[in-house]
Amino acid sequence: MDVLLQQIINGLVLGSMYALVALGYTMVYGIIGLINFAHGDVLMIGALTSWTIIVQAREAVPGMPGWALLVLAALISMAVCAAINFSIEKLAYKPLRNSPRLAPLITAIGMSILLQTLAMIVWKPNPKSYPTLLSSEPFNLGGAVISPTQVTILATTAIVLSLLMFMVNKTSLGRAMRATAENPRVAGLMGIRPDVVISATFIIGAMLAAIAGIMWASNYGTVQHSMGFMPGLKAFVAAVFGGIGNLAGAVVGGISLGLIESLGAGYLGPLTGGFLGSQYSDIFAFIVLAIVLTLRPSGLLGERVADRA
Figure 1 (cartoon, rainbow, N blue to C red):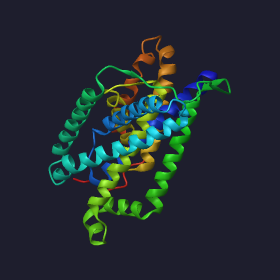
Figure 2 (figure 1 turned 135 degrees about the horizontal axis):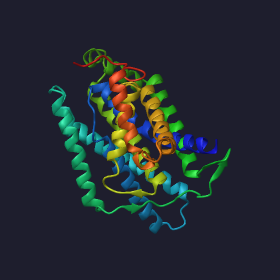
Figure 3 (figure 1 turned 180 degrees about the horizontal axis):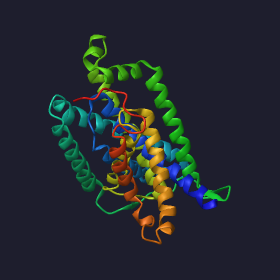
Figure 4 (figure 1 turned 45 degrees about the horizontal axis):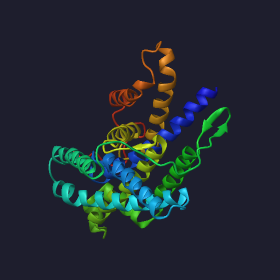
């Protein structure tokens, strides 16, 4: 039972990070039907930016509390990622909105490679140790262990998701986003500016990715220029799993994928006699994707927007 609870905790932590990134995918897809494959690299930029801020702030203000360093790094990283995603949308995606779907898809892959290359030039290719800013004393929860960093990740995710859902469902921007997702032309006739809504969507997605990047770096303790590829890819799987274009689906898909990966890594090894152990945990996401696309292509919760043929 202790092992099961530990794997569930690990899965919830992992899934909450996937969910934040998956929301960025699904928001952009819901509005303009684009899969932004550079989104995982925005996560990477957020993590590396926060690492730089923390290192520089520690040198400038040696006695600054860890939580204050984390907040400062998060705010600056969110601003940097928002500016990058805003620029990507304006320069790379906006000119291709009326192009065949393959053109923006290839552009998104190109932007991913560009961001990785620029990050490698700026921060160098070697991995860097991410500072431990919170207490390392773990809590005991029913025989399982959970660290203060993991508690912070779960709490932050819950707060961010609640704020996002409130924004989408209760604010004028959220109503504009839903209207633009349904029909951009009709939304424009009603006084909504689709370009502004699309830019806001990219900015919000980037801020979520920055938060997820800091969480990822804090949880695993290392950052480098290629760190965004696998989380971004798995978050895309989570978005498809839950029903891409559906915000609740992104959350359900992210949490579900995290639990599947964690439980699979913990139990599949003994069940297969060591043939599939924790070192194969990355394959579970793609097994899930294959099954979902075969049995339910629209995902667990389907889509809220009309299919853009």
